[in-house]
Length: 162
Image (cartoon, rainbow, N blue to C red; front, side, top):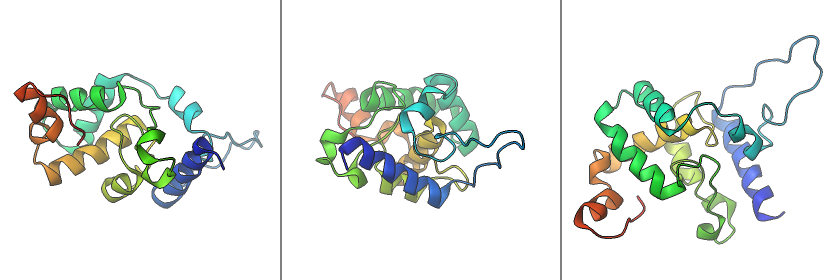
């Protein structure tokens, strides 16, 4: 299994554990899309609606985090994934899909699983990814301004991953 296939398999596993079951197909359709089955990571993300600001606003509303977090979250996402919800840092994991940072906020699958909201366990969905990152940041650092990356930037140092 190559690196991308392994990452897609890991994403499908995480989805099956945390995501609600997909709705049944319409009676007139017998085909099930690869996206609904969790098999096509890139295709799913190409269909994600919105942009980083919309995703961040939606995640803030869903989690109840203050709107003042928006700028910090966008800065983190810009450094982590270049605001690309399809980002998968295979090099950082040494090819190990279980340790491949994924998505807009470059969440490790295990960290995402620990912080995903019930019914929102799709690491490939930029809003689900943000919601899990918000929970992680809140619990570990208190707010985005206290993450290592934003602290480093405030000192004039290079960004450090959170």
